[in-house]
Image 1 (spheres, helix red, strand yellow):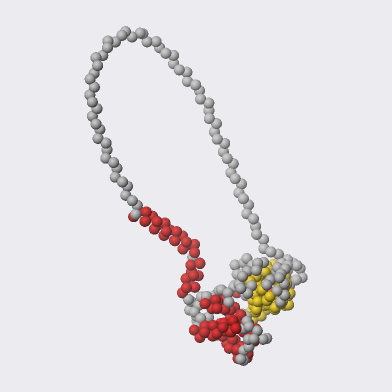
Image 2: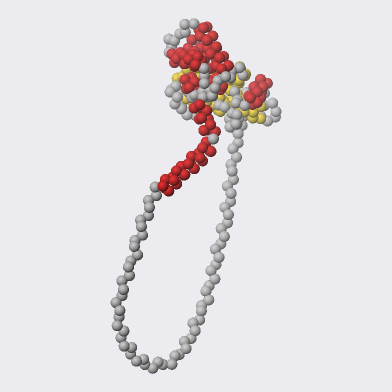
Length: 334
């Protein structure tokens, strides 16, 4: 392994430990170190930032270490100390507040809406303009007195004739409105999980035609934190993109020991985590690289079951590429 590959491999393993055990997020070693939910000891933080500086220099072709053995020993020591320091690390305030806000976002949203409504009501109550005073009632002016005229003598009135009573017409009954029929309820559509790949295939990989992936082997390996992980080693050849740096897969693991494959890990499960393939360097169009896809489920029970299944050889893994990133962190599409 060349010197720049040793530096990138150590930094990649440190990124994985920061993401899995320290709650780090982001893209690259520097962002994952700065976003951890726990306080990394100052001495370890300083050494990791020094390795990040070497990682940036290692992209050059003329990069060379003074002593490869000394560097590997110090890198392994940093990974070991980082795994041990997690047991005594204290939570950081800002990531903890961000996590609590995300967990109770519905309650906080309802409280914020209620607070805004209360403030608006108080503002309208305090600053509401007073209505103008009513106009004074008008003063009535006395009308002039009229002089009465002398009444004329009444003439003899004729005898009254009785008028016939009017006949009432019967009104037509008003028809009652027809009741509208209730609308039929819409049926919900069921979402089915993807089926396993072709029979007899241990690992089935789906990628765009611009990327050719050749399977080398699938095995159980020991991770940086000491726990076993499932690793799929493949050769990736970039056929159509100007540059390619990272691929993210959705993964399904099936138990094929019975007559019908049974899903053990599904991409939509509560304990599912994506399978990431981090290339050591961005590969341009026409280049190839060996990539290791590591998987460790967040649920210990699912992880132990999956590892035992892969060790038994009666399994099938289905990987589907869902994200491709270039060397400028721009999405290349599916």
